[in-house]
Length: 542
Ligand code: NA7
Image 1 (spheres, rainbow, N blue to C red):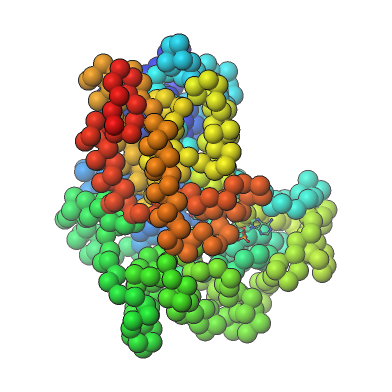
Image 2: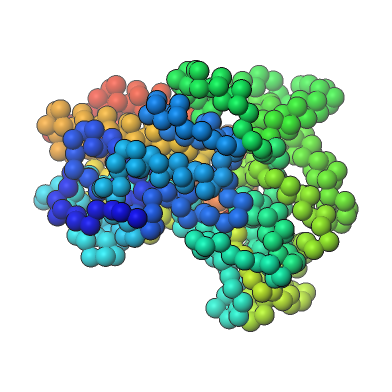
């Protein structure tokens, strides 16, 4: 992979990460005439879609909506082949974008940023990498992704296992041959649910270790509907604009009624119709209160549980696969292709870790409280240190040597999920406190990058040198994010949205659930009021 080998000692901006957000940030910085480099730990561009190349990896947002909107010709030219894009197709798209806009030239691959320290005297960031770069930059943009630090299972013994093991998010570039093997999968989140049906086909025998049964909806994936593509392409600007102003980032008709105010018959018909759309939002957006009222949520959860019972032929297995103990949608729901059907195969087994917890990984396989299982390979689909992990993996120090780790010791704080008080000229793309993981990520990424570019251009035009979130604005925004979260069922559930999947992590609902459109409007207002809530060097706004 070609990438720039020389990195100037002084730059206008350093961007960390060459996924969708880092690449688009670079594009905008260049437009502003700024010198910039993107440091990327991976051996190629792509971010999430570079790393997560496990069998079956696929985006849960439909292809026509999971792409950049900033290049109108590209969106007309690019042809997606399936309703939902596979990882190889998305990676090909990202590579194409990088080449089309000559972005690789300023991307430094295979290089991990280890530290970023703010120097109050020069008002610049000193950025260090694991390959010895030391760069002084006016701006530091963290485009590190929300799900990029893998989480291992918290059971001892992985180093003793004599077979092979793989984490879904660090899959070997040359795919793995599981033929003839006894394979274990630990984890039934989105990655496990996508990988399991394919691993079942490839392995001689597959055993799934499930701790929490998840709600999985069908994708009804297949070749993309060409008529739909033509319709969308004919009105792409309008489709995109409607997405930007919607709740999730894709326009859907907003629900108007409570699930509890309609008859059971009507509800079931509605759920059925929406289930058949094969998407994440259909059923969950059927009524206004599915994510705020437990009784309303139960109606949708029961509907999904009935579909699982219908699909899985062995009643005991079906019972184990029924999600219980958390409201539908409050752990990230999954989209799958043939997931529940896979458990009808004779060569697929399910171990319920709630009944028999995992105790250790042994030389030969896995030991639960009941017995030892032998395997040739173990697949860890155990998820990520989500939303904060990748920021905190870097030694980031702002004013007075304050570390981001100290600042976030009780949970992440920041203004609009974009900037953090005490850390001037540092930006967090899709950071905690923004809609990020509760939205179509590309819509959120474009909005953040455009907004940051607008701010940098404002600073330049006004001869200003630094911008920093004020403590007061950060506090007020944090309260608002918390209140919005608490009005829902999300905080009641142990999920990675809450940091609950990582032992010791502060329990905080980390995303802004007010909706992409509302959030966008707030950011626009802030900018319109002279970047209200940010302190701009040389003038104080807000
Ligand atoms: P997730 O959604 O965090 O799923 C991880 C899974 O691994 C989940 O089922 C966990 O069970 C399970 N897990 C984690 N640690 C253990 C241990 N120690 N023992 C047993 N099981 C464990 O990660 P994914 O990679 O699937 O998906 C991440 C996001 O990517 C997804 O939400 C989409 O946004 C795309 P738990 O539920 O914690 O009981």
